[in-house]
Image 1 (spheres, rainbow, N blue to C red):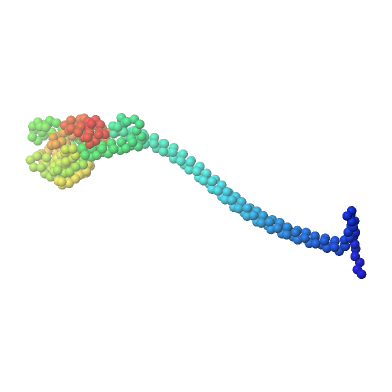
Image 2 (spheres, rainbow, N blue to C red):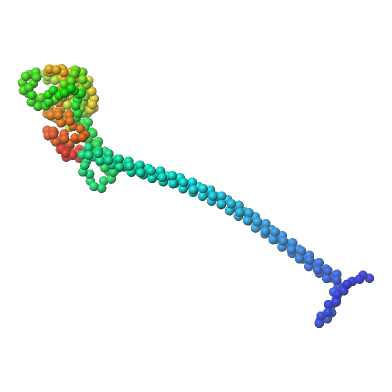
Length: 310
């Protein structure tokens, strides 16, 4: 018969016997249950910890990427700030240069306005408006300086006879001299004093002019070039101011090599002297000295012109 260890538990309700192997079985069962529970809890904690670590690694990686992105953005901002600083410095230097240039432009414009007679400008005009007005006035004056005879037609030694009454050197009688005589050697170039069209080019019989060139200009004006050695243009052709049109000589009724030069308005002779001296610097003088031409009617076409053209 096998020996068994028996424990007797006595309470007020009575006594109870418990065998040792039963106790061990209970303890073993409890141990197994606790071990199983511990295993599942540990596995759950391990899985959860692994997931947390994975999340932490992912968050760390995201944070690292964001940090690198922020570092790159910061470097980009620093680079842009540096470039902006350089651009601001360049802009400041450019502004100073433009201010200096504007001052120079203003001084130059003031001189041009003075030369063009635009001394009384409306108040409050901007620099661009003044430039536009000055440009328009300059174009008008240049057009008139190319359309109306001005300047000398030949590089001459001196003027022999001027416009007015004189004793004719050939006819030996007192007659009106309708032009000016420039003493010059034969073959000296003769130039057109304004743009125009050749009305006549050749020998003019019975006039005493000999070889003659007559140019028609704008506004009813004409110029005559007489006693020429050679004519270099043909009738009906256009010529421009400063173009060589002939060579001076001694043809016709003449006592020596020279150029006879006339300015006419509607076939009426005018004193060439004011035309010879007329230019941009004394633009208004012509319109007051030559009273035979109705300059005031030009104000309809060129309202900016002052003096006699208004």
